[in-house]
Amino acid sequence: MLIFPNPCASSEYDIVKQRGLNRFPIRMDNYNKYKSNKMGIAVENLPIKLDIEPTSMCNLKCHMCIVSTTGYKGKHMSYDSFTNVIDKQTGVFELKIQGLGEPFLNKDFTKMVKYASDLDIWTRSTTNATILDENDNYKKIIDANIGELQISVDGVKKDTYEKIRINGSFDKVVENCKLINAYQKEKGVQKTRMWTLLQKDNIEDLFNFPRFAKELGFDRLTISMDVNGWGDDEWSKINSAKKVELTQNDIDELLKIAKTLDLDLTFWDISVKYNKDNICEWPFTRSMISADLHVVPCCIISDPKIFTFGNVDDFNKIWHDVYQEFRENHLNIKIPEVCKFCYEK
Image (tube, rainbow, N blue to C red; front, side, top):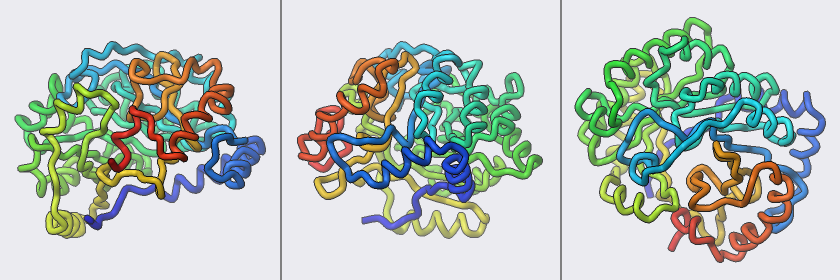
């Protein structure tokens, strides 16, 4: 078993969470209900965390993404739909505004972040950084007070990066990373994190990623050591050959390099599976709303064509009623087919 530091919420997360609980009694009441509940088939509380997909469209065709490998057709969520969900989900204190697509393609993305942040909901998202420079997006997202913006950088060289991030410009991403990191430092905040998906096409750059992150102005780097399952057989077949494994010596060496750079280096490993003694908490605490307003189980199964609970207009009924069979199956380790990727066989 590998030993390494995982990404963790910042101190700002705890501050925003508590401020929101104190500010909104209905949120505090929901949180208290959540804490008093045991993982059960029925729950009294609404979700305390939520994922909302602002768009399922993307401007890149990365070969490890379902958008490019399955011909997925995307759409944008409207600002009014977003605010309607937030206004009804009164128990949420953590929000990921992210899904299959590139969030900045939705012209209202930064407005969405600001709307949630102004309600003391801690927000995070992920971007490929290709259009951060357009319309001052890099300034708008920092000024919207996002909790954390994860920026995907999968190569330290142009040829490696552009082989993975098809249609992406390495030079543009480098420039945009420097722009946003300089701007946040000017504002005296730390919002960004470089996120690298390790795979066979970039493994030769492994020990160069920490230094490259620093060159781009990042203070935090997470190396992800696996790709998600998506619940799609064709996607899984394509990507199984791209996975790589690190040794403990690799991790220790990377941490040593990061320490000399004063870089906060963490790792994300989804190869550690759930089991009967450690079941997935998503059905009991969290849900996801897709860009086309479907309620889906989680960010891994985010394509409604794979699985949907129904339309978001019926969310509260879905959460309290329709979810019950889904929760019962998890509790009894009768794991739904779409969830088996995350569980021990």
